[in-house]
Amino acid sequence: MTYHPKSDFMRVMIERGFLADCTDYQGLDEALIKGVVPGYIGFDATAKSLHVGSLIQIMTLRWLQKTGGKPITLMGGGTTKVGDPSFRADERPLLTPAQIDDNIAGIQQVFAKYISYDEGRPMPSSNEVVGQDSVALMLNNAEWLDGLNYLDFLRDIGRHFSVNRMLSFESVKSRLDREQSLSFLEFNYMILQAYDFLELNRRYGCLVQFGGSDQWGNIVNGIDLTRRVLDHEIYGLTTPLLTTSDGKKMGKTAVGAIWLNADMRSPYEFWQFWRNTTDADVGRFLKLYTELPVEECDRLGALAGSEINEAKIVLADEVTTLCHGAEAAAAAQATAREVFEKGGVGDDLPTLTLERSEVADGISVVQLIVRAGLAKSGKEAKRLISENGARIDDQPLTDAGMMLDAGAFSSPVKLSAGKKRHALVKLDG
Image (cartoon, rainbow, N blue to C red):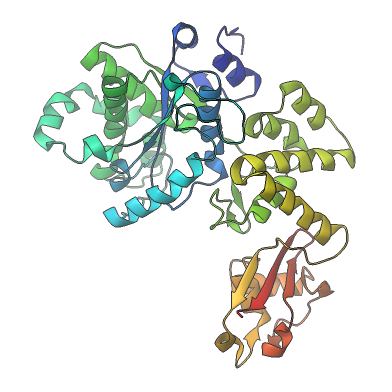
């Protein structure tokens, strides 16, 4: 990256590793210097929470607000009804309007932890007060998509799109090259996303769309459409699609997605995910997911031997504080030290609570391992036991046929998968 930015936002994007590509570095940089720049990211409501794979996007909006810009979080109440086909092998399952609304309600809880939607209020986890011009907007594209007249939309908007060009986008081309079907419904998605950018520019003066690098084609479509219809200059900036140093997709683990909502992934498990970061990723993740100075991120990331573990604790504490608050981060660290250093139970471990009726006739330890989230299936749980990776109350678990009755739960039972994943099982009441 040879561009030398003048604006604080572009400097942060480049120094901290957020920048994959930009449609016009200098144009966007100069717009940021001239005044408040509204910028948006769209989030389709396909689940009740976002996971850490979306955190780089959320942090991009947070930095935009911290440097004087205006974040727009766009909920995809309309586009979720179609489904983004980008780099997917199959069509997304269609959700009902009620499911979409329910998911939006869950996702909105995440943003309130990172971005300020109130004038004069400090940003979450920060003492910085947000001015009127930088107050964030929470919008829903159903507002303008749900009422579209199909024939008018085809005539006024559809005529600006070349099917030849749309077929050349990598997200579409890769699907067709694999000879996997792409429905007409999905093919319309990129037109709707482009129309979102046009509407946000027309209604709110939005100047830039952010997204992962897989969204480049969709972003460019929106820029082209807005130029053709409104003759306005707008911009696109993409962030890298992150994988860990061992090649795994960011946010996916053996136990599933690392959700940002506490009711879907406990703060302790969230903290533990970051504590388990591989050594090679620590410095990079500190820059992307915390607000520590770049020099401190570099220093911590360069630590070697056992010292890197302290850097991982700093990473876990900082990221968990932003997402769940300082108290949750401190409790998670205390539980981790209790469990790992002292061999104790810990107060903050994920807990499975059983009804007494469920154990009246006994319950298998394999079933408990699955229900506690330590394995995805009974087969995986049995393999864990056969490979000596499971423990019960810190003792090796060797019998996959073990049954536990109500008497076994006179105190909470601690289950472990390997050295780093633990859960408690207790009876209700």
